[in-house]
Image (cartoon, rainbow, N blue to C red):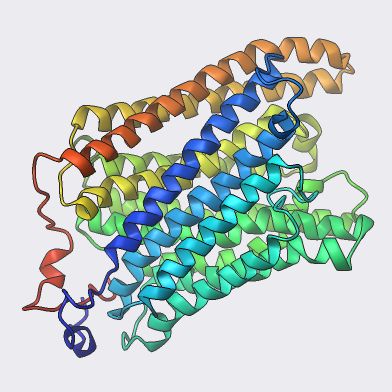
Length: 482
């Protein structure tokens, strides 16, 4: 625990609080709003697989465009807004300093969500690039880069100026993630569009697809876990050294593995082999995060009954362990012969993007919303329903897609006609739609509870996690290096 910094005590909390809770709250609201649209877009798209599209012959609502809205609004609308909320909550506490500017914060909020709105409209109008996870219209791309630069200014300011001698590992991940976001987006959206074409653009697209997950979502998610889990469990992380091994392993191996999305393509085999090796290596490194979580949680098993935020983080870490095990096998050329272009890949993507990082975000929201509204959760029943409906829905979807992917793969290897394969897949896709409805129902429980808590909370929330460290006389101080 660091000593209170004098700079944080120079101004009263009422005039300039250390943590901008209003920005945290509104980024959470924005993220949840975009997720609502994205989930319904995913549900609608699943109906296309059942040949039950309810909006035929309407170009702006065609299935292909709806799918792009589903993926982009989750990546940039939900995840990034939630990460910005997390940064406003954590960075000032870990550095003892405020972010660069409140006005800049509101500019980032308005600009980023304006970018998401423009992307949403542009995708409906068919102005999409042929870049997976980068279908944003070409006229939006420069705005995204400018937005990334504003984020650098906002959060690098306290990180660079902090007097903390030993930065907690969360700040390591955040500091690197800011740089990786800008570089990754430029590589995936500008180089293939303007500088590199044809087969040469393939490796860059593969790197972009995976680096967006591994070099932006992953460091933000890992940093989130390393901050909130010790707070929730009220104990330090099990191994700070192990967390740094994970950081350097991520930095070294992850940028090399994106080509594994194009195994069996005309891309030179040395690039494909290097992607396979680096993917297996990084999955070994990722286990450091899983081990650190479960060893920190060890001895606190009762929290699974008493703390719903810990349930979200626990299940997210368990899903992470499964995805690591999957990755180490599914990137091999032998396994790819079975699962390439099958539902297996879709199930894996949902487990890692939704079952890990989105679950951790739900855990963060469960933890922070009472602190942001000043009221305890209105309904404990809705909290439980939200968890179980979402968790069971995701696991039902994952298992269904995994099984259907294996069946689809082996049928293809045996040269079964494509029409027969599609008929065989239909019952699995029906179950997928039902599990999607379960996920949406769980999410609806969360949203309803958030609204009820904010508008009609009956019991005032007493913050015992942060206020003892912040309420020093009339000022605020940081937790510092946890």
